[in-house]
Image 1 (cartoon, helix red, strand yellow):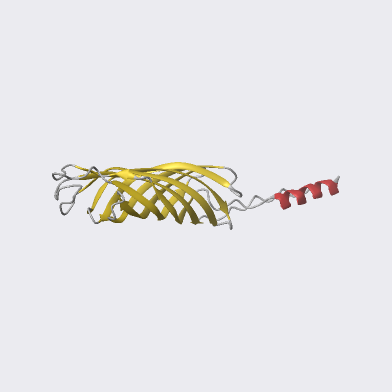
Image 2 (spheres, rainbow, N blue to C red):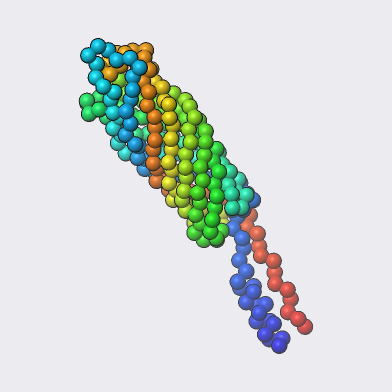
Amino acid sequence: MRKLALAAALATTALATPAMARDDSWYIGVDAGVLLVEDQTMTFSAVPAGGRAAPSLDYHKGYDVDANIGYDFGGFRLEAEAAYKRAKIDLDKTGFGGAASALSFMLNGLLDFGPDDGLQGFVGGGVGVSRGKIASDIVNDSDTGFAWQALAGVRYPVTNNVDVSLKYRFFNQDDIELIPAYTSAFGVAGSTASTKLRTHSLLLGLTYNFGSPVEAAPPPPPPP
C-alpha cells in the first residue's frame, strides 16, 4: 500500500507543470506584415469646367507595423496600440500616383480561448484615432478622425514569457476630408476631396509577458 501511495505522489509531481506567465501580468509586443487596401474613389466638392469624374484609388500591396502594451487579466486582455500602414496608389490609371498611409492610436479588447500552455486563439477589436494621408500628384494632405478595427488570430508560447502570434486585422477610417493644393482635371484647389481607408493585414507578432510562472503546489507527503 505504501509503494502505491509513493508511486501516486511521484506521478503527481511529474505531471505538475508551472503556469505560464500570461495571466494577471503586463506585456509588450510588436507585429509586422503585409497590407491589402480596398480600392476606393475620391470625390471632389468642386470640379473645374470640363473636368473628369471622381478618380478611383487603385492600391498596391503595402506594409503594416505596430507596437502594443497591455494587461492580461486571464481570458481577457486590454491593450494600447500604435500602428503605421503604407501602400502605393495609382489614380484612375492616369499615370498619376503616390502613396497612402495611416498612423493610428487604438485601444483594443481581446478575448482569449484555449490552453495557456499551448496554441491559443483570440478575437477582439479596437477604437481610436487615425491620421490618414494621401501624398499624390493631385492631393497631398492628411485628416485625423475616428477609426475602428477587428482582430483575430492565434498565439503560441515559445518560452514561459515569450509568445509568437499570427494576427489578422481589418482596419477602417471613414470620412477622410483632404484639401487639394492646386486645380487639376478632377478638382479645384481649396475644395474638398473625400475618401476612406479600409485595409486587411496579416501580421506576425512577438510578445513578452512580464509575469512570473507560478509553480504548482507540491503534492502531499506519502502516508507513513
